[in-house]
Amino acid sequence: MDSFDSCITILEKCLSDTHLEKSWVDEIVLFGGSTRIPKVQQMLRELFDEKDLCKTVNPDEVVAYGAAVLAAKLSDKGDKSFQDLLLRNVTPLSLGVQVKGGAFEVMIPRNTPFPTKKSKIFDTSKDNQYSALIKVYQGERLKCVDNHFLGEFRITGIPPAPKGSAQIKECFEIDDNGILTVTAEIISTGMKKELVISNENGRISEKEIKDMIKEAEKYKLEDQEFNKRLNAYNELKECIYNMKIKIKECNVNKRVDSGRLM
Image (tube, rainbow, N blue to C red; front, side, top):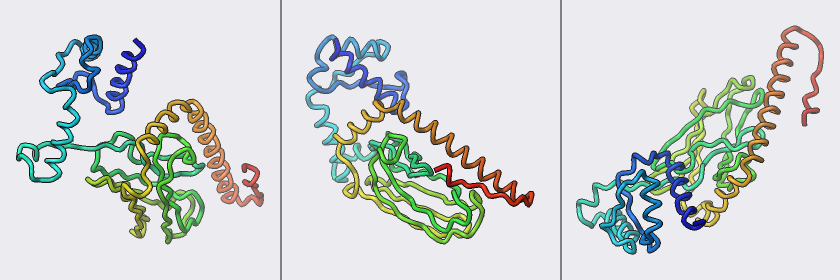
């Protein structure tokens, strides 16, 4: 029963990851020899509220059938009926950037179908900040050091301004071929810089992907504690920064030593 239950657990996780309701599933196609086991079929029907299972395709040939359809579509030489099919891949792990405190800011969540394009606007973290280092990571942990580093680039020429006044728009775009392009733009000047990451450059194996997902579940509570500490630390720094501004506005000659925070 442990083995049977693990099959259902995988299906439930699949539905959860893709944000699908069971009622949205049109057909349940069986593949693999284990789906011939009556108990497996019974549990599948129960999971999908007694919905009938599709048995019109040989379960030993389903994967090969799908691969043949994909090959026909990609070659543009197959049956025209295949060309109307929409076959979409998804991102195996979340993609994002490092933000203050070494935290991982997700730009494209795991299981997002591509091609896709996501963007966010970030404020400068220091007064008169001239440049920003964009570090790109792949993974599911809340700390960047626990994720897979993909690459980095620096954008310069940010006009002098108080902390939080200047803004940088960061954009993640994945094309049909799975190539990731990361762009940073200084909003006030329009200056841009980008980094291109191909499938062969920096991506990780299927085994490493599975291991990283398992680690994210294993250290979920630890990551939540890190997030709480980081939020508290950032709130304290913001409070001190605002107090320093008020002191200057009141013409009080007093020095606040922010180095003690470190």
